[in-house]
Amino acid sequence: MTDIVFVLNGPNLNLLGTREPDIYGADTLDDIAGMLEDRAADLDLEIDMRQSNHEGHLVDWLHEAQARKARAVLLNAGAFTHTSIALHDAIKGIVTPVIEVHLSNPHSREPFRHKSFVGMAAKGSIAGFGAQSYILALEAAARF
Image 1: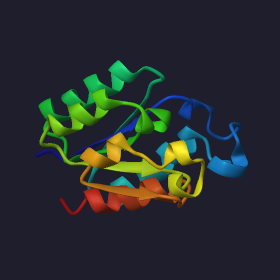
Image 2: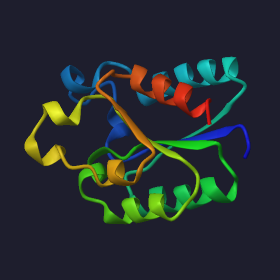
Image 3: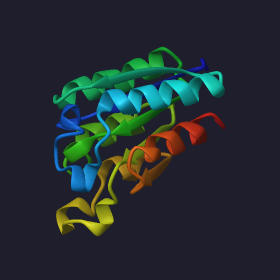
Image 4: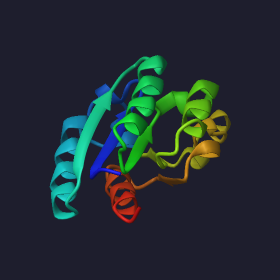
């Protein structure tokens, strides 16, 4: 295991800061990356943060995390959370622990968001704390 933590972000998360700030907050993905890098330095960890609107990229990056012996993956799969059996299977297919992350609380939103294929395969889930959800997930990953 290395001291690298992959932080993978799915569709539309590149729009953070402008997309429905009443739900997702005002922090951009770059803001979150900065917060994570600062906290990671305190924890002697390194962050590899990525975003894609394409499901296959996320699957490939999960495989890469295992190949690079990452300590963990923090995964905010966006809408793929509720639709992607491919992500579920990729998480189940690797030994690298995956922590599901959400800015909002999917269970307090529309019913179609209540089912998480990612959560069914992940080691754990952190949701509903805005950008702080990522920090809480990183702190959990530091204990692996």
